[in-house]
Image (cartoon, rainbow, N blue to C red; front, side):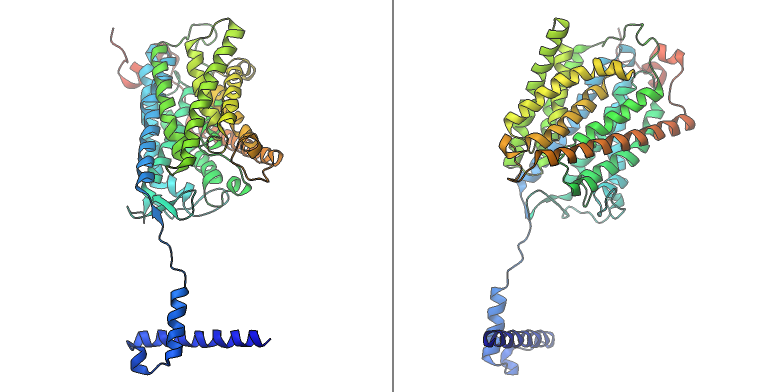
Length: 466
C-alpha cells in the first residue's frame, strides 16, 4: 500500500512538473530564471529521455523501383499481351477490333480509376465500398505514403495508385473476349464504365479495402483471383448470353486466324504476370520472391497438364492448348502466389490446367453460351480453383505461410464465401449493365456488319493488307 502511495506521489510530482514546464515554455522562461527546484527539473529531463521517440516510416528505394517495374509489367500484360492473345484467336476480319477494344477499355478505366475509382476502392473504410475522400486524387502528393504488409514500411501512394489502376484496367479488358466479333465498340465502352463502377470497385474494396467485408472475414486473395478473374469471368459469361451467339456459330469455321500471335500474346502475359503477382507483395523482399517462383512453377505445371490432357483426350497436344494452359496456370496461382509454398504452387497449376481444359470443352457445352475466347472456361474456372486451393495449401503443414493454428476447413469456407459473393454480385451487376446499354445504344452490330467484320465497319481500317 505504501509502495502505491509513493508511486502515486511521484506520478503527481511528475505531472505537476510537466505542466509547469509547458507553462514556462509558453512564457519563454528557463528553469534557472524561475528557480524551479533542481529535483523537479531532473525528473522532467529524465522522463523526456525515457519517452519512446516516434519512428519515422521507412520508404525503401528498392521497393519503390520494384513497384514501378511491376506496374510496367502489368501494363505490358494488357497492351500488347492480352490484345495479341485475344486478337490471334479471332478471325482476321475482327483482329483490329479486338486490339482497339483492349487498348481503349484499358485506357478508359485507368482514367476513371484516377477520377473516382481509387477513392471508392481504397478511400476510407466500409464493408462494401470506400468513400469520395480521394476523388480526383485530391490531397495526394509525391510525399503521400501507402501501407505495405510490413509495419511502418511504406511506398509512395502515387505508385500504389498507378499499380492498382492496371489491375482495374486489365479486369475490364478481359471481358472483351467473351463477346468478341459481334458487339458495338460504343457498347463495349459504356458497359465497361457501368461494370467498373458497380462491380469491380465494390469487389476490390470488399477484398482489399480497409474494413472490407471479405478482408475482415479473413479471405485470402493475394493478387486478384476473385477481384480480377472470377469477377471478369462472370461479366463475360453473362455478356455471352445477353449479346447472343455469333452468326454461324457451330456451323461455320471460326478457327483462330493467327496462333503465332496468340503464342506471342501468351508469352507477354506470362512475363507481365510476374509484376501482377510478385508486385502485389508491395515490397521487394522474400515475399515477392515467393510469389515470383510460384508464378513460374504453377504456370509450367499447367502447360504440362493441359498438354497431357489434350494428348489423352484428342490424341494430340496443340500449341493453342499449351498457350491456354499457361494462362490457366497464371490465373489459378494468382490468389495463392503469396501464401502457398512452391510444391503447393505446382499442385495448384496442375489442377488449374486439367480443370480449365474441361472448362473450355465439357463445361462450355453444358453452359451453351458462345463465350468466344473462353473467358469463363479459363478465368472463371481457374479463378475458382485457385481461390479454393489457396485455403488448402496456405496451411503450414503443406508448405504454406499460414499460422500454426491455420484451419483448412475454416479457411475453405471463407474462400468459398468469397467466390460465391463475387459470382452473384458480378453476375447481377453485369446483367443490369448489359440491359442498360442495350436500351440506351444497342449491344450488337447488324448481321451485315458482323459478316463483313468489325475492323472495317467499326474502325474503318483492317489489320492486314494483302
